[in-house]
Length: 374
Image (cartoon, rainbow, N blue to C red; front, side):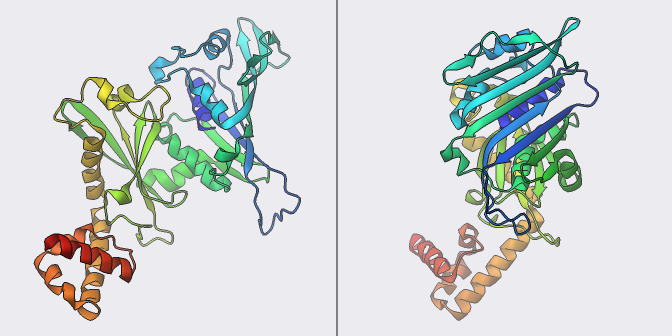
């Protein structure tokens, strides 16, 4: 579904349409026992329909669609295989597109599944005189459906997160997300109200490669702190920051009612060139630039970006660290005095201990530090 939304955004980039619009309709499984007031037993989504008023399936675009590894949109970072990813998660795709060809309006309708395109002779004159393309992803496969959000709000925020670079660049078309229960979210409004004001960015270089790191506070829609490596204006790979920054555990309290989770988005021409064909990972080793003292390895980039994240969040992390040390000092003083000498002589060992663990987990962590010192 993300892939279909990105395709719509890119299609609208190439049009002169004044009112650029994308609609996402998320259809749920039927549930006769559903109570619209209590919202008990919300059913999962089983199909997604993405509609836009972009260029549509013109002869060039349709020829590209039928060509594996198409290079039509390589300047946008497209590898020409995104449509095959649809069939990894869905049984079939139904496509309808109206577009202008010369002085006439044409319509193209076809199905796409593992057997190919049907029918292949799918072009006819259209009674409609407006650009409109509908992509319906049907038959959401169970293993993917089980991992998909149930909440339309969370799904909407995941779309923003995946396409954040487009929202950042101020040329994002209007995007609305609806479901079969009548819920609706205008993504541009949510971004302007809840995300843009919290944006901050850092620029840095590793060797000769330049990077831009966007910092975002996510009051809702996120459940963990993450750094996203982006390529060609979209998120490719995410890293959980609690595994890198020990004190970054749980929602950060900033005096607001909800607090926030941190999301970082790292962009670079180097990342654009290193992304793999399916846009699921990076191939740094094959880029020919891995020899810069290993600084451009995944680990090297991650460690450098983490330093800027620590600096951006320093006020919150300092407060978390302060409370953590007070808690450990109190625990050692009143419950486990055998660790007093360790804490007094090697205070840096506390940096590796997470702030939100139980007393039992804390005892284990301190014992491990004591054994290593011994």
